[in-house]
Length: 465
Ligand code: ARG
Image (cartoon, rainbow, N blue to C red; front, side, top):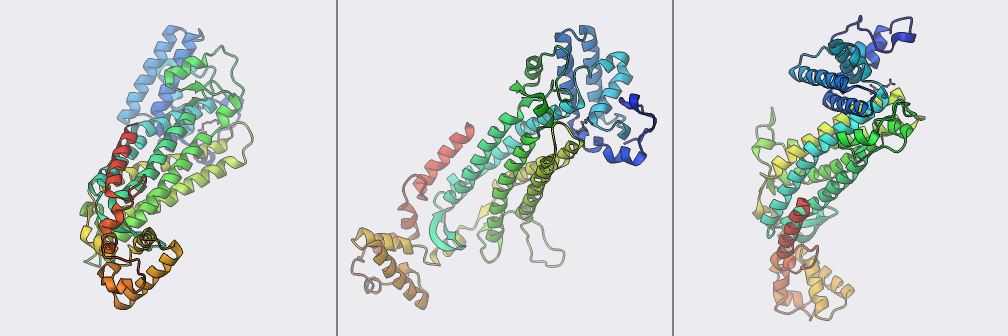
C-alpha cells in the first residue's frame, strides 16, 4: 500500500488543511475492503449503463467508463494497481484511477450515487457471490458426505447416549442423518437469508435518493438483484442482512462444534470408535504416541470466533441513528472473517467426513456394555401384559443383578430373568440383541436399518432440491 500524501482526494473542496497522517491511516478501509473490487466494478458498470439508459451519460461516455473499469479490473487481478490509503477505500481508489485513466468522463461515474449506497451494494454482491460460489456448494458437499456415510453404515450399531451415559443402541447411519437434519435446516436457512441479501441499495444515494431520473429496476436487473430496496434511508443504513448471515453462520458453527465434540471423543483411546485419517490429524512434538484430532478441535474453536463476529456486528449497529454512519465501515472485517471461517470449516469437514474410518467392533462392544437394551426388555414386558411402570421396576432389578455379576441382560439365563417376572418367555432374547433392538424401531424417524436407508435416500433427494 503506497502512502501517496500528494494524492488528491475527491472531497477536498471545502477543506483548507490536509488530513492528519494518523487519521488518514486510522480511517482507511482499503486494506480490507479491496477484496470487493470485482463487485465494486460490477456495480459501477451497471450504474454507468443505467445512467446512459436514462440519458444522463452518452453511450460513448458509458463505453469509455466500462472500458476503463475493465482495464482496472485486469490491473488489480495482475497485482499492479496503485492502491493508496489516502484514497480511503476500494471505491475511491477505483474511481480515482478511472479518472486518471480516462479523464473528465471518469468524473461523471459518481453522478446520482454515493459511497453509502455503493458500499452497501458491494457488500451484498460480495456476500451473494460467496454464498452461491462457495458456501452453499461446500455445505451441500458436506451433507452429501454424511448422507453417503449414513447409507453405507445403516446397520452399524453403536450406543446412543443421553447425559453421555449409554441409553439405547442406534445405528451409525441414523446418527449421521441426525447431523444432516441440522445441516439441512442450515441449508434452508441460508437460502432464506439470501432472499434478503439480494435487494439492491443502489439508487439510495447518500440517504435521500437522487434528483436524477434514475431507473433502479434497470440497475437491479443488471446486477441480478430481486428488486431495488423500498426505502433509501434503510438502503444505506441497513446491515440486517449481514447480521442475519452471521446468525446463520453461528448456528451452523454451533452444529459443527457439537459434531466436533463427538468426533474428538470418538477418536480418543478410551472410545476408539473412529479413525479420522492421518491427513486430518497431527502429532505431538514431545509425545510420540499422539495423533491429535486437530480438525474438529479447530472447528470447535472457530465457532467462538464466528459467534464473536455476530456479537461485534450487533454492537456496531445498536447505537446508530439513521442513516449512514462511519461506524458501518467496521462491518466488513467481522463479516469477511466469518465468511472465510465458514468456508474453511465446511471444506475441511466435507473432505474429512468422506474419508472417516469406523471401528465398528469397538462401537458394538460399547453398545453391549451399559445395558443399552433395558428399554427393549421393558417394552417386551408391556407387550406381554405388564404395565409400563411395573415393567420399568422389573428391568431395574434385572439390571441391578447385571451390575452385580458384571453381565449384560442378554448374557443372563432365562430362569434368572424369570425370577423378576413370569411374563418373560424364551423369545425374550430375540429382543435383547442389539440388532433386534434397532430393527424394532421401525417407524418414520426411527433407527431401524431399513428406515435409515430410506431416510438417506430421501435426504439425498431433498439435497438435490
Ligand atoms: N469505506 C466506507 C465504508 O466502508 C464507504 C462509505 C463511506 N461513506 C462516507 N460517507 N464516508 O463504510
